[in-house]
Amino acid sequence: MSATETSKRFGQSALATPANAVTMTRILVAAPALLLMHDRGAGWLTVGLWFAVTTSDSLDGWIARRQGATRSGAFLDPVADKVIVLGGMGVMADRGDIWWWAVGAITVRELGISLYRSVAGRRGVVMPALRLGKWKAFAQYSSIGFVLLPWTESFVGWQQFVLIVAVALTVISGVQILQRGYVNWERR
Image (cartoon, rainbow, N blue to C red; front, side, top):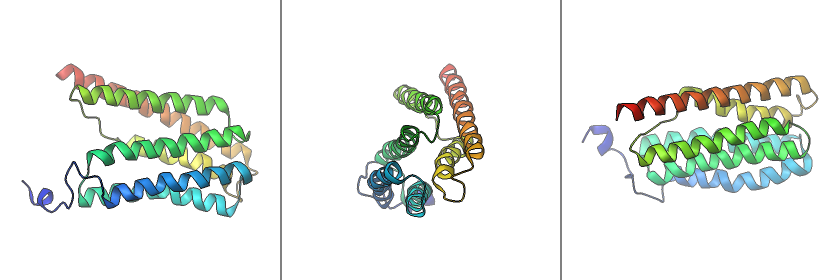
């Protein structure tokens, strides 16, 4: 065992970890944030909650890397990300603030890649998050944030541009994951 592995506080099978607590808190805070987004739309309280929920995505990963990544965290974190992104986009589309086709494209990719990763994992192929996936998540979060931020709520052209960037990065990162997974399956 390396020095890094022995200094980890939690093993793979741990459930009650600080990283998982952050992830669960993100899911719990997402519910009132989504309700506020639906009822009020743009506003400082709404964008503040959205910012807290989305930026804490990095916090749970940072904690897990230092204290020990767990299987439960590897499952919960992507679930939280999808609940937050797809929930936020669904709310914004329901309000008429963003296009439904964009929400549909992102939903198909997110759920499809989750299924693909699950199948790959059962075959012993691990597909960690890629840098483009981090940019994709940032663009998705930002596309909603631009609608919620009082300073940019009337800049519809910019909002649509950021949303298109989010959709493009979502599709491109999905293709990248499929390509990497296919190469890894072929090597087995």
